[in-house]
Length: 407
Image (cartoon, rainbow, N blue to C red; front, side, top):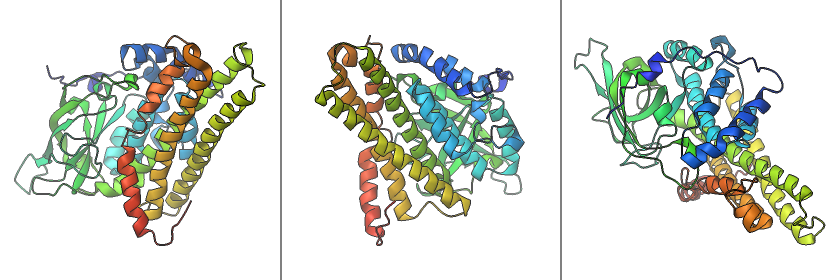
């Protein structure tokens, strides 16, 4: 049966725990780690972990302080995502994708919408999910098939916008309090004329149309949804039909930075655990050249991801600081390359760790190292906005970048 979605409207104020201070993040990571196995085993949304982030104010990490948020920046986002992913990659990805939506609002929403939404986000009352995939368009971010329709034909009346949307993948959508949804701008608009719309759960009928049964990332509960309802016309984020600018300025860079930080953080946490196990294990001779060579290759891959991630974070900050555009071919190539490198090298590093730890400690589901879970989770990285699509895009963009502007 359809869910009327009153939960978002009825959610009470979320009191912040008194865990603010230098150990706040470490305590959050411990909560995530405590519930990570259950979320994976039961393919269940990590409610306890997300609630801990709510109570600590971390849903408002990118909300400016004048709206009650933490006023965090991209450097903090990348560092925090890495730390959280060391506890639970599913929860870290949920958090990063929420922050991606917050950034889009902060940079592109109108002042009225910001005043309504951001204080609630900062209080932990508004967890945001992204609805950008479609049964016709697939994962092509800059296209949409289903159109927005005005609820009145009278141009003299403001009216609202009627939204009907089906999405095959919505991370955390069954638990979100609000959604940022891509829609074709109007019934007579082309598929590349896309608007981004905020829709509160209380305004929608939300229907689950399937289950999320996957090899890894099981705790993200990214199953398919059907949304239907009316939203005010002032809840279009950015210009009508102008989603491309929102995407290139905010959604794409935040996705590639945040996802890459999560994947690196999960692999880094796995290496930390493996090193501790090796130091205390008699099963492996840590003076062996083979063991040391394998560890060196793992470290090499993670160092490369870390360096590229940090430089791209700096580059995005530099462009934003001068009001520049991230739509230049070289920058698009570099952002795509970050996602490609992080997804492939982080997974490769964990694959090497499994090989080094062996059948029981590395591949076993009951091993305290939990490499098996991280391995399954990171296998999704190349599929999360498919690497094949990004490589094809980079090949096209390379033909446009005559200067070959390397990072």
